[in-house]
Length: 287
Figure (cartoon, one colour):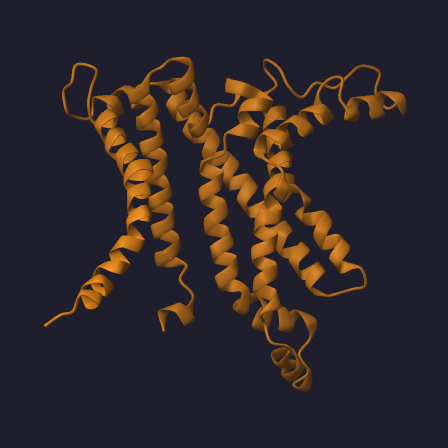
């Protein structure tokens, strides 16, 4: 016969999981169900793709999708390259490298709102950049980065702000990948007379590829959700997908269209994740 203590032992793991399951059901499961209900239900209560049809007929949707893709194509490669160079520099363990490490990681403590406000104080017409240029005699009138018809300039301010704000995240991932490479590989390479470039392409780059792919995946997904920096610096002059979710939800109270925007962002992120995990899989993971 099964004793009482044995029965308690059988149920104990499920009781320990119960708080987490309740949390997931209440704060993840229920919102997901309501989102699906909003996405596939029209204002008249009909089930179908009416919200998607409405969205695709709106030119702002295509503009937001285009701008989001532009930001992704520009920001992500620049961030990965810059983070990789910084990680290689810090990993050389020069004297005082810890100070440089702390300086690079400072933006990790800032939210996107804080970074956007700091960037605005630099690039606005009365910001630090214009004051420096005017006081040095390089320009006579302020150089405007924000305003009607200046979306191309605002775009590059957003790019610079995101590079400064989010590159440290990629940097930390790549630095961790570099630090786990055994020095024995490089010692063996020295024995065989490898040059610095040969060490990089045959040892460093292949062994950091898993970290590089993880950083690339995370940063790409975050780039599709970029909102705070764009919204504070340019508003709807540069519409992006996440910004339209906020606009439709908070400004227009159009919950169905806002949910449809969010659903499309989720689908794109799932597709990108599948592409990365399928076609960029490293050889050691395949084994």
